[in-house]
Length: 174
Image (cartoon, rainbow, N blue to C red; front, side, top):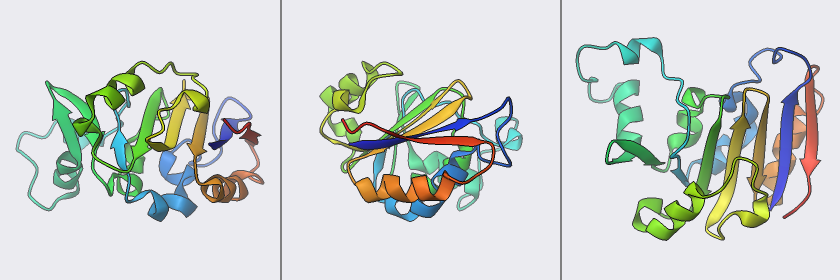
């Protein structure tokens, strides 16, 4: 896997570069087919969704968001294909990790257990072979994106490397 780390160079992120939607903008379509193991993602849903009295209207954005998630025992563990890039804006920059896999990860309890056992700073060599893409945000300070497809990482690197206020670095392959 190859990787990239995008860090804010000062106390604040430039423009809207703290948002995952901005980071993955040029590769979002290439992420659409992945299932996402998301247990441990911090959600930043619109405030209106949190205080809505009624269930979401079928076909509404909130309804689509809720339909895209797979929950077990009250915990959201996966997101269906199409979740990214569609809902990248609800993934918080504050301690979130998403692992993209080709098949429904809820059908593989060993995979979910392995992912749950990864530490926040685990190197890509520790990712299970099923993981094709990994996206992590750490403490509102930086985003990391790892992929088995090196061109995906190169595209994000080109997208962010010249943005004032960002430090963009390639990470060693692992």
